[in-house]
Length: 477
Image (cartoon, rainbow, N blue to C red; front, side, top):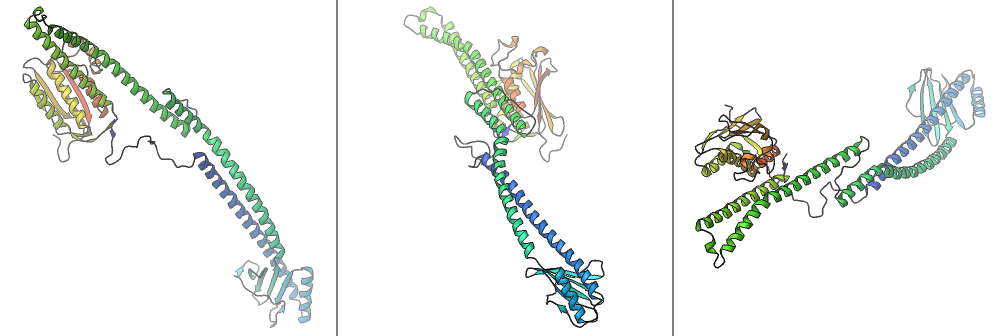
């Protein structure tokens, strides 16, 4: 298919890479850095989560312990008959639970015994008949339990040991995190080296192709993304091989086809040069001399036509073309006018509809003119060339060109589209053998097909199918 040359885009500078731009940092280091960042983030997240989990767990364990002790103390203190008994219970509690301060208020009592402890935090009902609040102030974990009868106990536990344990744990976790970061760096380098090894093999294979011009396919291993990339490169190499093969065939065929007219023309020119020497003019009649000159002119015309067709064919091989909306009916009308001027003795019957497609104007003009020239060449004097353009569907149209000549044998109908092929009965006629090859190449590049059938008059009928649509505002007939 045709490749669109986007307007306003500059061609790559000489020596510049045509592929996607790559930054200055090598891919290996970028991949290693990415792996390091991912692993380091994971290690850091696990470290922080571990520290938070342990800290939260220790605090919850302290709260549960204080809660049990508060309930026990409150149950024992309810039996106190006076302040002395209450103070004794508090002293006993402090003896058995060192490092914990106590504040106690019994139901109906107007005094609070024990240590002055600030009360705060959000109260919650834990289902034991008390409202409980816990918070941390000044390095102490303070738990308050209040009963519905007005009894209240407040315990304050020193968190110094817990904080020291958490500090030691934090240092250990930091050490583990640092080790994890070092391992992340090593893992990044290993992953980058191992992961890029297949890509490096592919790079070496591509560089080998560039250095040696060897277009054989690269070995494909597996079915991952790299294997798919290798298959894409192999497809590109296959296209290059095919292009070079076509180029070599074109050069070989062109050399073969040019050799005969060049040899004949050289012989005739040398003969004319000999006749121009003094005393040699009497060796040939004037009529033979004029015939010789006409032969030279005919051979020059034949060579000019052949060279022009070769240039057109080579241009068709180019991938970069300018695309535009082409009115196919206008192309056909213009081609009919041009060919009709050259063959005024042939009648052209034209029946076409309005049709447009996206394509390359010049190549379509050349292909249609070649079709009509071929039909007019094989039509006898006062013969008829029928040109018809009709819609096959909303997006496909068929252009048929029929002549009233001798036709093409069924066994030759595929070969007439080959470069330089000429049927035995056509070898005495002028022509390069490239006209229909140009037609086929142009049609296929525009997403169409071309084939040969028999016309109503027994001649040849060339059927070209092309994509496109009717112009906007034109109704179907």
